[in-house]
Amino acid sequence: MERALFYVFGLLAVLSSLWMVTRRSPLASALSLVVALVSLAALYALLDAHLLFAIQLWVYAGAVMVLVVFVILLLDLRQEEGRPHPIGVGRFLIGAVVVGAVAWKALGVLAGVRAESRPVGPSFGSVASVSGLLFSHYVLQFEVVSVLLLAVIVAVVVLAKRRD
Image (cartoon, rainbow, N blue to C red; front, side, top):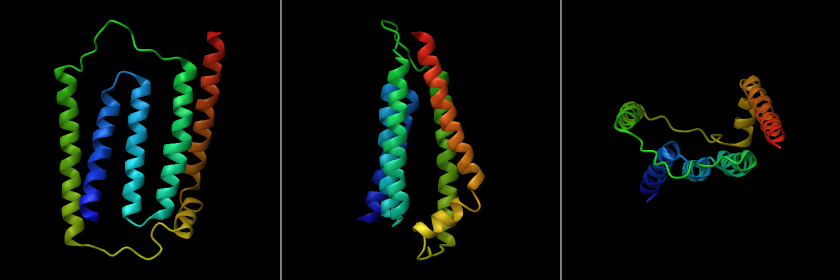
């Protein structure tokens, strides 16, 4: 049952991600991204990484997506009315090749993992292991992302004020 749920949530994450990149409406893309992020949170829960599950659900699917939707609504991005926007055969083929290459690589990685299956340690996904890595090895990346998010928020406010 757990394996079936893993495949269902994995497929849901992939399909909602594809839906996100093929939509013309920014709000529809953001909402499908929420579905993808919640699906990834479910995958973390199935892997018994409860801290990562909580972070994925609260921080990414909750706070960051509220911020993204707020920015979309603040900028008032509207789809052009009356003009259909077909995806086109070229774009579809490029997307199919990229998805196929990623799937091929993922299947190769999965085959390698099955051959040399390592048990996950008892501290996998715990607060101590995640915070230890985050604040020792990845502290620069953590700070860069926080400054980048702050810069994006300031840029959106400046753009919104300029329109008024």
